[in-house]
Image (cartoon, rainbow, N blue to C red; front, side, top):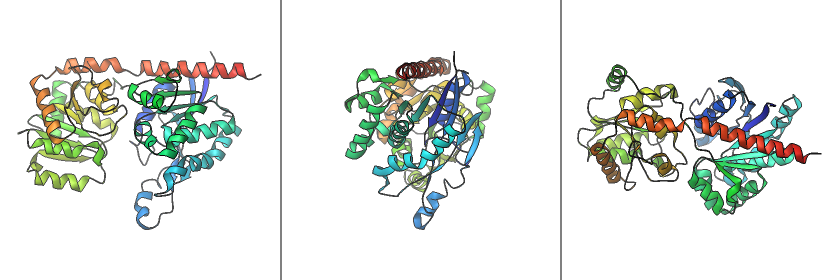
Length: 401
C-alpha cells in the first residue's frame, strides 16, 4: 500500500516557546504518524502583529517561536501570519491563506507534493485551508474541535465562510456528536461528517501505585479530599466556580494548574471566600507532569462553559481519577457512566458543590475509572482518519485523468 503524504495545517499546535499550546492536535498527529501509513509534515502558523502599545506584551507570547523545528519526529514549520487586533476576525481566514500560500508552494517545490491537506479548527484555519486547497488543487479535510462550531457561527460573516469551506471540503471530522450536529445545522449533509473523538495515551496517563500516589499527594501538600481544576486561567474555564464551591465543601482542598489573566482574581476570590488556605495555584505544568497531579487527586472538576471534547477528562480518568463536569457539548459523551464521574446539575458554585457531594456519596473505584478510560485509546480514531484519507485520495486519483 502506498504511503499517503499528508500536510497538516493548524494554528493550534505546540512549539518550543509554547509547549502545551494545541497539544491535543499534536497528540492526534503523533498517533497517526506512528502507524507508518502516512508521511506527515506540519505547517503551524504563528500570529504576528506590530509589537507596539498594549499589544507588545501579547506579541511576546509568539515572538520566540522557532521558524522550524522537529517535534516527536515530525517536521514542523511555524511561518508567521498577520493578525489585526479587534477587526481581524472577519478577514483572518483570507489573511492566513494569503500569508501561507508561498510556504505551501515552497513545500511542494522542494519535493513534498502532498496528497491531502489536513486542517484542524474550522475557523480561521479550515476556511484558510479550503482556499489553499482550491489554489493548489488539493483535497482538504477539516476537523471541528469546539468554539469554531459552537460559538463562531453565531457571527454572520464567519458563518458564511464556514459554510463555504464545508461545501468545498473533501471530508469533515468533528471530535463529538454535538459538534457534528452543529455542522448539520449549518446545512451540511450528515453523511459528509465523521465523528472521531479524541483519545488518551494510556501509557503516559496511568494509575499510580500506592507509594507513587502517596508521594504525589505529599508533593502537592494534600491531606484531605482533593479536587483539581486544569486549564487556562480564563473565565470560561470556570475555576472561579470551583473556588466558590469550596465554602460548601469543608475540608476539601483544590489544586489549579494553569496560567492566564484570571490569576489575581482567583487568588482574591479565594481570600474573600475564606478558602485561601485550601487553594493552590500551581501555574502551568508540563504535560508530562499531569499524570502525577491527576494521580494525587480524588476528583477532577471541569466547570467550563464551552468545550468540544475536553482531553483533561480522559487524562484524569486514565489515571483512575473520576470527574465532575459541566453538561456542555461533547462532555456528556465523555462522562456517560458512573465509573467516569458525575455531570454537575448546573454550572455554578452550588452546582459544582452538589456534583462533588454526589460523587463522594458514590465514589467509583480507581480501577473502575481506569477501566472506563481504557475504552478511549487512540486506535479507533487513528484508523478512522486513515480510512477517510484513503477513501478521499483514492477518489481523487480516479477522478484525475
